[in-house]
Length: 293
Image 1 (cartoon, one colour):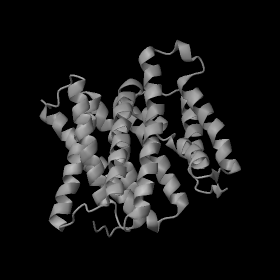
Image 2: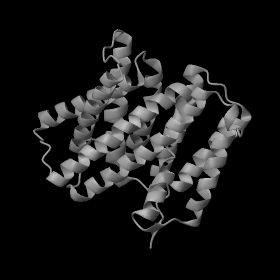
Image 3: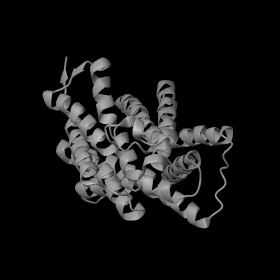
């Protein structure tokens, strides 16, 4: 996919588009699993059509196909958990929790890749927990059951999203350079099959009765899932790690902004402080300065 704009513009435009993902989920009147299905089905179909027009075929080794299926399982679980978190705690907090994946990746780096986290990254973990505690409150048992469940779903999103990112990292090490359009298309279509089957097993209909809902879902699939990711991935080789880290922060920050503007989420000074601390911790944790053991 040819993209000629300034890489920094692509980076932050992509992050802004992805930040709208939980907004689409909150706006549509379909089940959490159904909205996840349409995100990857529509986005995957758009990418598949692009590849067909360009004459590109998804030719991979057997090992890469296996890893792609594994990545699709992780991504389907990511959407299954995250969409429920969005419904229970709102776009802002659910997206912030999903971005705790940087700490899961840090742990995976220690256990799997034998990387030693820096002192700054170690400080980021308690900071993130402090920020989360300020947002949700220190008396866990006093929170409504759905809210607590939404927080748990958000943290589970971080775990499976980290699994998806690690799997994609292994895939990209063995695949030729360039945009991962083919890989994302395959992962999207397989994830759509998984979520579609899950919706049917849950007794949820895949029918979208409202034209407005279908329009939101198309925007979700094309703008956030397809275009957003392509803009970000295409820019990464041409921007600094600091800029990439700032773009990482832009998504949950804007999701909080959309939550307040579009859904009138009340935010106390304590919650705002907690969100700022958590975002700063995510930035520190995302700094790729781990040392190899």
